[in-house]
Image (cartoon, rainbow, N blue to C red; front, side, top):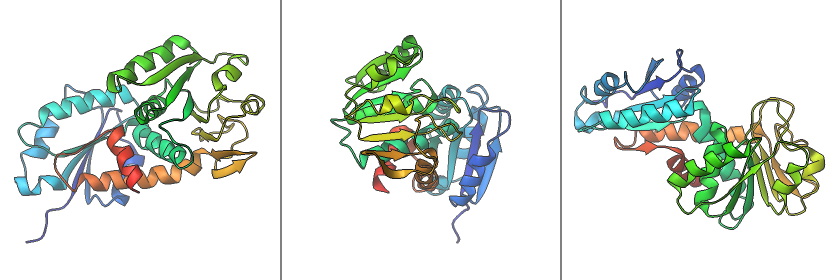
Amino acid sequence: MADKATILVQLDTDPLPSVFDRVVAVDSGAEHIFSYGGITPQNVTALVHGCIFTRGMKDLHRTAIFVGGSDVAAGEAVVAAVKAALNPFRVSVMLDSNGSNTTAAAAVRAAARHVDLASAKSLVLGATGPVGQRVVRLLAQAGGHVRVGSRAKEKAEQVCAAVRAHVPDAKLEAVGVSNSTDGPVALEGRSLVIAAGAAKAVLLPKKIRDTCKTLKVAIDLNGVPPAGIEGIDLFDAGIDHAGTICYGAIGVGGAKMKLHKAAVAKLFTANNLVLDVEEIYALALQM
């Protein structure tokens, strides 16, 4: 008897489910995608039960759940509700709201090719955004010292507190980078900088970057010109610019897409996986 078809249930917190995530799911080998928008913790239980009570135990690994949408906090709340509804049977679950987990994992994996993250001194700009928070979390878990940059230092401190909930011994320092005099201070002594800010915002001008003589790797995740780190090209992928290895958004994006597809495919290898940023990063290390 042939194996049952693979089914990915897309639970999106936005009113209209992401076409991007659905296309990637198709390219990842999911044979059927059931897409639902407007998902909240309050309306998710019946959908989860539809996943776990329709197939026998030996076939549950061929059904999986993908949680997405533009609001990462909303996605996290939905995943918590999904996990609560999975008892006593289970299917695998992946969280990638706003592409935050796969993008952050791909960026940190790129950095790890050039610096030892356990000893690196990093600066994350735009650290209060969905991708920035994930980048900080992964860098903190690696063991290095991380400066958490935001225009408002109070928001950076909130990110530090949130990350310490996952990484209690994290070496974090909140820094405010609201004006041109803050940049050189925040960048001082850093070997790695990752910019994960909003589109069209220049977070690190070249004249400030050039003041840092310890900088080895610079990664800009802004895909809409102008660059978040001035002087980095969208397509840079490990390009040496005056002694600093640089990655642009598309330079990281190729690895992000491969990782996204690999993570979706992995969901169908077991029925008990929960793929959050740590698990997705572990997968990136294997690729």
